[in-house]
Every structure is written in C-alpha cells, then in structure tokens.
Amino acid sequence: ALFNFSPLALTDAWAKSGEGTLGARRAEQLLRRMENLYAEGDESVKPTANSYNAVISAWARSGTRCAYWKAEELVNRMWERYESGESDVRPDHCSFNTLINAISKSQREGKAEKALRVLRRMDKLYQGGYKYARPNEMTYTSVLNSCAFTFVEDDLSKRKALDVAIFTLEELQESHYGNPNHVTYGMFLKACANLMSTDDDRWRRVVEPVILQCRRDGYVGELVLKQLQDAAPEHLYRNILEEVVDRDKMTLVKLSDLPEEWRCNVHEKRSWKGRSGRELKRQGVLALGRTET
Image (cartoon, rainbow, N blue to C red):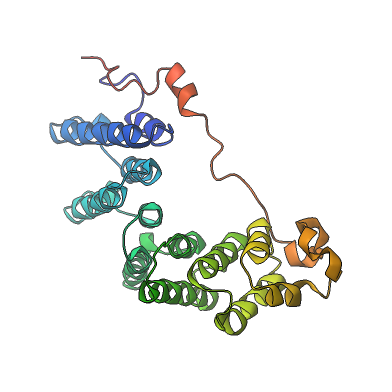
C-alpha cells in the first residue's frame, strides 16, 4: 500500500485539522498525489467526490484570501472530470454548498451576488435534470451568510447585498427545496442589521413580517433573539415582544422567557463534533510524509 491510512481519511483529517492554510495546502497536495497515482494506473487511490469535497471544505475553513477561488477551481475541476467520464467525481450539493461557504468567508467584493450566482447555477442544473445539485436549506442559509458578512461602506453595495438577502429568503419560503429554520431566519436578520440603518422603513415593511412568520414557524432561537436585541429598532423589538414580556423586563429577556410555540422547532447544535487537529496529529494521521515506497 502506498498510504498507511486511507487517502480520503488523510485529506479529511487535514480538512478538519484546524490548521488553516497549512491544512488546506496539505489536503490539496494529497488530492493531487491521488490524481497522479490514479492516472498512472493505481485504482486504489481513485479520487471521488468526497475527496474533492474534503479539500474544498479545507479551503473554506482556512481563512486565507485565496480560499474562494481555490474552492471554485476545485468545483470546476470536478465538473471537467465528470464531463470527461469520471462519474465518481461529479459535483453534488455538498460541493456547491461548501463553495458558497468559502465565498461567504472571503473578503471578496460583491460576494453576496457571487453566492447567489452559485445558487442559480445549482437550480439551473437541477431543473435541467442533474439531480445531484439540488439546493437545500443550507444552500440558501449560506447565501444569507454571505449577505450578513458583507462589510461595505457605499450605499449601492449595501443595497445590492440586501436585495440578495430579501430575494433569497423569499425564494426559499416559496420553493420546493425546503423551508427556513432558526439559522436561516437568524442570518437574514443579521444581514438586515449589517446592511440597514435603524431608521430604514424596510424594518417595518420587510423585516417585521419575517419575524412574525419566524414566530409562527417556531424558529425563534438564540441567534434570532440576539439580532432583535442588538440590532433591531427599539420600536420593532417592543412590538414583537410586548404581548408576552413586561415592558420593564425587555432588556433582560432570555429565550426561555418566550412562549414555547415561538421556539418549539429550534434544535441548537454544534456543526461538527469531530476530533481536534491536535488529537489527529498525535495519532499520526496528519503525517503527510508517512507513506511507504
């Protein structure tokens, strides 16, 4: 065997190592090595979609400035190989969702519009019969995340990002791809807080109906409540809570103070409960050079 460990396990370990750019580079080095060995005839290290997705995830987690285009390059590479006949590397919703995640974490100008274009690509592929690109709630929530973390000064850029946020939430609410959850609503409110001033009339016209729908859906979670407390105009915050919370206690509201039906569908959890990169290193899993000749 050329590897002491499964090549996929190695790339996945580096992707989740917490080593930032180093982890992403090592993961991509392993993928390149797998590609080369497979091209030379070694079927045992044939890359799969999971191999590529692990590396895309590594770049998305890296925090480096080049993460977005590295992730996009890998998705495009997957597509080229798939179209050339390698069905095992077809891009799927995980590939595209992770690309959007990389976009959202970048400092790229216009990243909200770029994330929406990836969603549009997924929708077009799925509607055209490519079932592996079906968007889901995470796809839409990741686009909203790109809006929420758009930091620009000029009004035009803010308006464009806000338009993306409003359009994205409305499309999810009306689509057959899923429904908003507590994270979706929270990210939408965070986008509004970041992109609108407190005297903007859209808090009343656009945001208040969304919050009321969030209540009806039972998705008022910690993120939603925090955005209401920290960023919403005071009059909106009081309008939302005054029927269930005494006026003199509104600044101290906890999630448990809200009616059960407002939060009955919220299930907070960590996104990944895997082992730390340090633990994996102790076990030798991340030793890139540990191969047999």
